[in-house]
Image 1: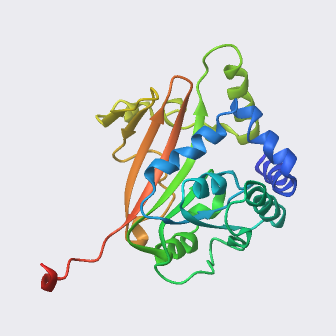
Image 2 (image 1 turned 180 degrees about the vertical axis):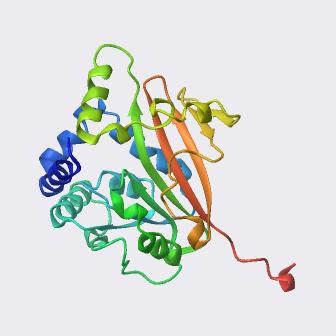
Length: 251
C-alpha cells in the first residue's frame, strides 16, 4: 500500500468511530487495548495529558485510576467519541477532551506530571510537538510514547494478521527482531524484568526505535523499553524531564 493511500485510509478512520474501532481491534487480535494500558504502570504524578486520544479508551482507564487527565485530539469526530465515552462511564468533565494540535498545546507551562501518546502518527516526530511537551511537563515529569507493536507469528491466526499489518502499514510496521538489519542489536546485553502476567520488560540501550523523536534536543533524557509476551512485542520510548536541582538552603 502506497503512503498516499495509507494516509487517505487513516483519514477515513479518524472520521468514523466504528471503522476506527474495527481497525484497532481485529487486525491486532484484540491486543491494542492491552498495549495501550502499558502506559498506566509508567505514569508519574497525577496530572496526565494524552496526545491523540482517539475513541477515549485510555481516558476512561486514566480516570478510573483517579488520575486528573486531559486530552488533545485534532479530529472533531474522535473528540465527540471520547467525550461520549466519558459520559457513558460518568467520569469527570468531558470538556477536558479538547480539539487542538499537539504542536500548540493550550496549557500553561509545567501543567502536567506525565504526557502520554499511544500509537501516534507523524506529529510525534515534529520538534514543535516535543518542544510543547517539554514546556507543559513539570520538572521530573515524563513523556511516554508507545510507538509501535508487533503481533508475533504464533498459532494459526496471528501469522495472517501479521501479513495484513505489513500490507496496510508497510514493512516499517515491523519493529525489533523482525526488522531487517537490526538483529545484531536485539542480541545486545540489556536489563530484564519479569512480571506476574508473564510479560518481560527489557531496557534497551541505543534502541533502534524512537530515534526520530527529538527528545535530547529539548533536554529530555531517553529511556527505551521493549515489553514482550508470548504473543507480541511493544516498543516504548520515554523522555524524562530533569528535576530542578535541590536548593542547598533546604538541606
